[in-house]
Amino acid sequence: MKGMLQYVHGNTILHKVPPLLKLLIAIAICAACFSTRSLLVLLALIVLDVILGFIGNIGRQTLRTLCSLCKFSSIIFVLQIFFVTQGNALVTLPLGVRITDEGLRFSAMICMRLIGATLPLTVMLTLTRLPDLTRQLVKVLHVPYKYAFAFTTAIRFIPILARDMAAVIEAQTARGVELDGNFIKKLRLLLPLCVPLLVSSIRKIEAGAISAELRGFHLRGKKAA
Amino acid sequence: MIDMQQLSFRYESAQGNALTDITLHIPRGEFLGIIGPSGAGKSTLLSVISGVIPHHYTGDFYGACVVNGMDTVEVTPTDLSRVVGSVFQDIDAQMVSSMVEDEVLFALENFGVPAKDLDSRVEEALATVGIANLRHRSLDTLSGGQKQKVAIAAVLAMRPQVLVLDEPTGELDPASSQAIFRVLRTLNEQGTTVVVVEQKIMLLSAFCKSLCVMDRGSVRLHGTMREVLAHPELLREIGVNCPRVATLHEQLLAAGLSAGPVPICVEEAKAMVEGVLA
Ligand SMILES: Nc1ncnc2c1ncn2[C@@H]1O[C@H](COP(=O)(O)OP(=O)(O)O)[C@@H](O)[C@H]1O
Ligand SMILES: [Mg+2]
Image (cartoon, rainbow over the protein chains, first blue to last red):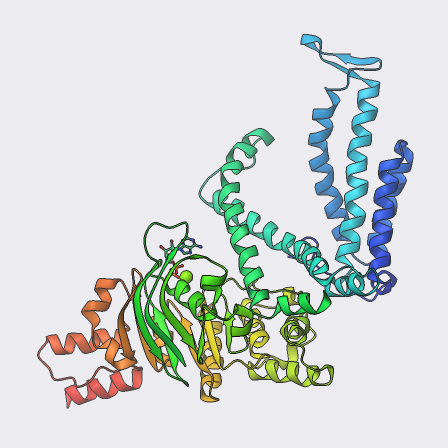
């Protein structure tokens, strides 16, 4: 299975757009999501993201990402809805907890912003070869090579870490740990596993850094400076 | 080529020594396998050779390690890397890019190889490990064995005289593991000194010229494959599996049959058994 954020090869227009322009479009969509307060505009932006996904021939994958983002944001939605008490009560629960129209609107906005801002970045990064992006960052934006390298390495590590996480979950499930339960229970079971995961991530990053150093990474840094 | 004199090392954060009083000479052209239980100090020893210790991991360093006339404490790991190429166990973590070609180009560009030579150098490195056809592939479309070959090609591009590998087959299936060792043998035949840490004794006995057995920070045995495998009881005590051909030899001796020298491959074992039966 293709991991998230991994480059998907293709020949669409979006593949041919220069990487920096793609990044710019993605950032523009993000910015639009955070500056608008209209749910309709947010919805339109999300639809735009999905359309971009289909143009880039990764429509299905985009929908899948959308789906998991929806799941994740539904948790935030539920949490948010109880914290906003302004506006007219739609439902009043015991203990003075109210669900208001304003709360509903606000939660929906937060969630749609989250989705609308994450989606364009994942779509564009999936359609961009990282080395091309690094090269453009250095050549066009004159970002020092070291920083461009760190940036693209960070992005490259996301799927690797996601895979480690999936492996841990799989191993725990195989040992009979029930991870299908509710969110809190899941969190309680997974949290202790995060420490070894973090340690192994740091090991990996260290190994990567050493491997780069042993192949002359610092020499390039020096010449550029 | 590599000369360690009474070398001891303790990681700053650790209580005891990771390496204790190691004296080891690895001649040019050697194909040395290193084996030993987990925590024996194998990776630490390789880090010393590549200069990562004491430059990256600090601690108490005693004694000396000289590689090709350079004292590893005095020169930087980057300078050492012109002579010593290092391949690590974690296949994905050691990659710096997402395309095969870029991975190999990384070192070449860093070391300032002239642009006109880049193409042929990449071609040469990939061809040496037999994956010239993968040049334009994306790394995440490759199998583990192919990726490890890319990692080897990426350091070979610098044309190192020494290649050190830390459990390069740790994440691989038996067939890919064999393939990696065949690549190492070819390199060794072309003159590269190869030092490889490996858990699978069968691979080592089939491919390496000599073997070093480590345990708790010390070198317990070091010699030609045959010399080391002649000590099955010591190997067992350390916790290293003995190849079955060596165990068979031991059992024949125990049964009072004169079996001759230890066999190190199936053909020799066959000859030994035929000799005993005759
Ligand atoms: N970065 C480190 N910091 C502190 N101690 C370490 C570090 N790396 C390894 N060690 C310790 O050094 C000893 C030797 O480890 P290592 O060389 O990795 O063994 P091996 O590769 O043979 O399994 C072990 O006891 C290990 O816990
Ligand atoms: Mg090790």
